[in-house]
Image (cartoon, rainbow, N blue to C red):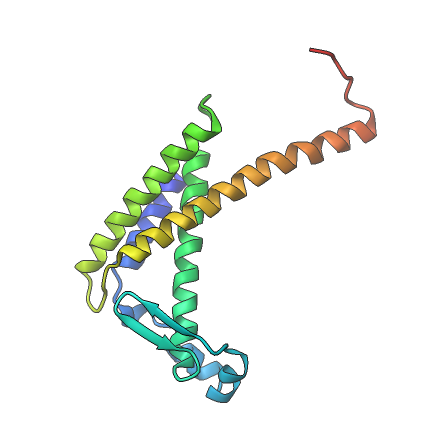
Length: 168
């Protein structure tokens, strides 16, 4: 259920105009340009058909970083929720991971197509790649948790003496 809700949330955001999603008004309200320039690195970013020079466009640069980080986060959560939906299946992790990543790529592609129909939005192949990386980061987080949590649980029960070792 959560995977469908998260997918709908992604499409809701991609249906909004760039203006509706802009955080620049908030950045202008909270930070001075001098304050922004003191923490922003000297870097130029080329993405899609745009060039952002961080020191000349600090608010645009901060928004760019925020937006791309949001892509990673949204698709990492999508992958986690999709994996969770498949968790009960007795498939190998790699099979579930592959199915989840295919789902993430399909949703990312549909999301970019949806953006072509939205006002002031452009679709970019780079965003599909970024979204796919976000999905992979979510899967890495799952694998890490599946590796670490059983070890923590096992060490706690060993300290309490609740586990009896059996040889297989």
